[in-house]
Length: 198
Image 1: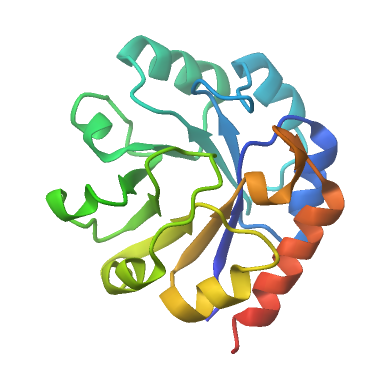
Image 2 (image 1 turned 180 degrees about the vertical axis):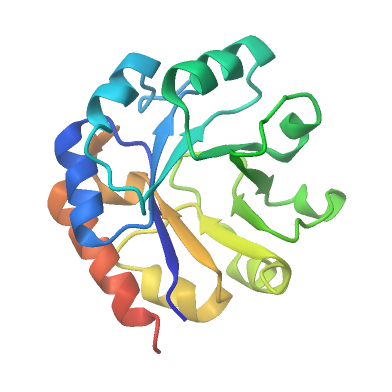
């Protein structure tokens, strides 16, 4: 089975193109407080050439309805990714997919979605690896997108250990905080694809 790959926290058109060219299935734009944060205008400017088959993901964290509405109206993402409880208070139209974020330690208090969801540590984008044994048990439900501390050096082991539906990388393809590296993006996708059949 082909693993779904998302490259997150993109901030320039060059690295968006590198992610698409490498074969990523989704590209993420962070609208939450982060070194990777982009404005609606910046996200639009760097995502002009994304082909229809690649999902554009708005990554948020506890946004107000006003903040979400600005991203929805101005950027029009294919997917909203935010903490699971945020969906209780946000108005998300039916044409936008929902990816609730379940955080390690709190996931047991939340019903595991039947569709796609992101599983990661307490802090998004911090390079924090989750407990893969715990993740493997949870991954049997729904379509887990494993995030947190993934990079080319450990992604094959992560795929083998957890068997997630998808994977999500941000800091693991950076040369410095918030600075994506085209070569690292390409290497990550290549190693992940090679590991699919292990």
